[in-house]
Image (cartoon, rainbow, N blue to C red; front, side, top):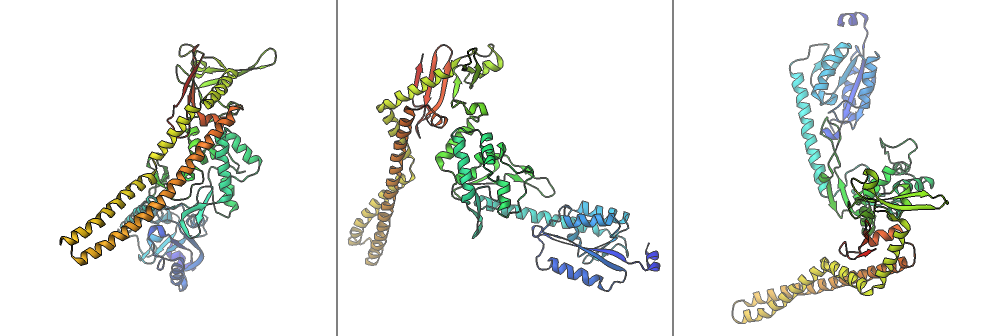
Length: 533
């Protein structure tokens, strides 16, 4: 092939291939795209047998695989006959995967009549066959890339454990702080949509219906919103029209980031491996890294609904007791059946879910008309509210329990004890000085030090007392809210939001009435039980 080429003076059609990736530990200065271009261009400048066809550049692509746009275009041009010579600065620019690098250099290129030149390594396939050092060099290049990969992963993991955000795109509702790209701040426009989603869900609106409402109002879904904000965001699962969906709403409701937690490392990818999901228990969670988007109470209610499997279908949307009514025997959820009677009226009766699915062999009907259940619950709630003693007792118990958990209260107690100790030590100082235990210099020094500490503790105590007063005001507001809420439901038909706040579950017993289990605020889960015939 060489003799014919010299006779016909046909030059090689060359591709100058350039690659740079910081992830592979490439040196920015010596391995920069500009420097590689200069080196390769200078090499072919005086070569009459080499004609430059094009530059093929992959800037920011790792050499551990060959999924690179520039490289792919070069291979297509080789197969079409446009290119028959490839020139690189060194083997590591071509690739760091020794198996695939060996395939291209030792098999694919020779089979297609392609001349391969690596300047720094002194390799030119036209002048001499590849020596035994070629595979070894490829192995060293791959091992170097592996070492860099391990170091980068260790650094990223350390940042994640420190609560720093390292992702490319924050979750919907947040954006990167312009002054610190590893910190998240609230994006108010998107945050309002997220808060609305949580509020609607807690009020009993099904996830599918929430998505429909947002689409009807033409509110951009997270993928579309990111693109409208100018971000180069791509989601493999998004549909062509990019609409809100059931799964999008579910992901938002379950996202711990909205509660102020930094949750990362949900997926992991080893070098040359596929990206794989990490079990939830191995995710890296750091509390209090950014401002919560959802208030604690709203977040708690939403997770309670999700955790209790009280998600609803369209029919259940019309049933405020969905997921609350249980069979007293098998403890499974009751199912609401509706049908039209001969006179045109609608009948609505609860049946044990196990009975409906498996028959009498597994459980009995436990039939309860929906109208009876609604009437009993509303009447019982009024009775509970009218029981001022019971209600007051539970509110006070909740307040006491919350106060016991207060960090400010514990810290105040400790600080007051320290202040008392300092005051006692100051009194003892003079006695120690008079008896000769302390010199005059030591006496003056310790007196000043104790005075400083005492002043610090006095200021700290004042701050803690203000904090406790604020906590007490919040507790009083919470109790007042609860009273107002219960008074409101006393004279109206119970809706799902209030039922979820007040009732833990209702158990229906076959021919033995029902039991209602209540819960209020931070009290114990079951605080009141009543049986009806």
